Image (cartoon, rainbow, N blue to C red):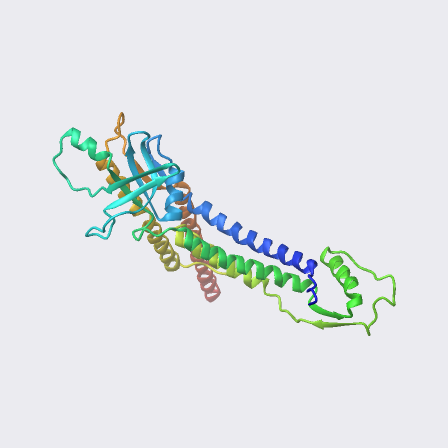
Length: 335
């Protein structure tokens, strides 16, 4: 049985394309991850806790725990359900784990009980606080992967469309002329002019060119990418108002967009604030009267204020244009 001939050149081209596809997807995914992990700022966490690790657990797993350990003190870990479900649909027990660390803890319920100091101290070491990424304890990573996938598809489609504008044709030739044609196309790919030295090497009878008539749609794909990017930012609760020179954003549209952004932001912020409230209720931080809290980073507030200012400026310009128009019409009538 004859062995099948392997075309290593085509395999290398496929590997290069697959590598670029993967890098494009990972690039967008990493961009989203960096933004998502920077939205919230944890304030007054004990030094033994790590806000970076806490947000990463919420991003990838949708939940985390705050607890007090006899060896490490106050720490935050990953967690998974381990036990029955209580009347509010939450696990009664959690397996709190990290690298080379694991412990089973009961979920803190917040029920007030009269306990002695010794009983309360003992309870501190077998209960934990559940931190939820959102009320459904869903991770952010899955949604970000979908947004990154759509952007990857659009970006690579844009690349292909631009390539087709460079050489919008298929070339049919004899197998003996294949290498010559490939080298010629590589010259075009490298933005070089290519001159064939032997007129007998390529003749009209030896090659045929088929036009693809591929339309230029890269500009539309870029607009599509902006829509996907803005949708992802809205999902994360980040303001993304973009004013186009040809269009003006009316107040109702701006307010509606800000309301949706705020609701998405609150879906992440409220569960974190509830975890802070429970932690402050259960644990009294030793040596300080400060309570832990979480807030949106101040830079995001500035972005929202700037966006609102832009909308206000456009409204003022519109009012000024209307006023000038009205005054001009009055002057014409009086004249």
